[in-house]
Length: 348
Image 1 (cartoon, rainbow, N blue to C red):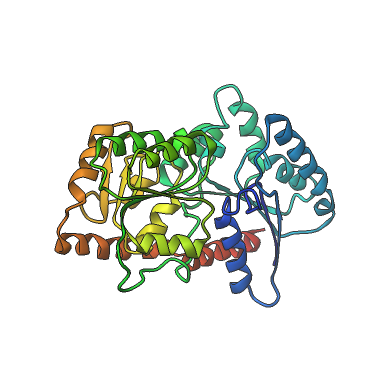
Image 2 (tube, rainbow, N blue to C red):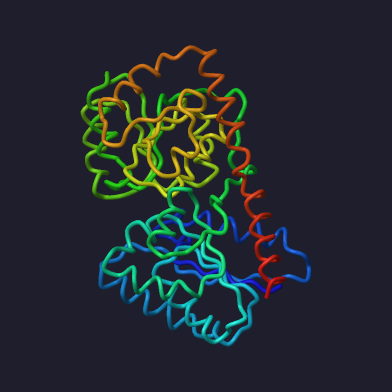
């Protein structure tokens, strides 16, 4: 079989780990494919641009895709519905026997599709043969907004050769946050909670984004025990997870929340908002804790009380975090995707 992956999310110099999960899936699929199978990828590298720059970037991508219209693929698999669905829709018009798979990641539906344009995108999405939302709540939104039946719910997958628990690693951070410094990621909620805590609480904040970076640096200068890390590799991130006791993610919205799964592979219990894919991964009091989104006091109370959690209770949480996340391995997810491809081709 001959497969083409298409995505607008892929690592670049400016955003080294944006879409790293798509790259990981591509590399893993290449590993498990039979010798007679082939897979290619068409991607846009993520860059920091203005609105005008983004338009130019997409126009350039559409022109760069032209040679692919003249190639024959059994399956075209799109990661992120909007806006590259137009490329896939045009390809399907030229090659009607080709099967189209789309993995929906969250913002491509939750933010981009609304009451003004959903009628249009319902028509465009008729080219899709198999829909893969990364979370159950997202699956409902795909059905509501696009009228699509979802084939299977699959996360992006965690590479257990990269993320794992390192034995005898010293815990130097009480809490770690990983993500873009955006309001949707709840960075403001985290910083407000930190400002109320004693200054001996230690935090590691990993990510990038000008909007809150200045605020984080200001708090560091005021004596808060915050370590700021920018552009960490996946191996560096694993090391930071293993040096931390809890992951804290106060997002206002999440399609799945891959960072939670990555942290749990490293044995970290998590403290997360009760949204989207987070609540599909976390069992309150078993492998982590859930708090209601925007409830800063509830987040603050968790941060305050869990710093001094006993070793026995912490170890139970840690072991359950590892156990409950095993099914989300990259290897397991890619085997399922490979089987989806084969079943679609057989049904053609």
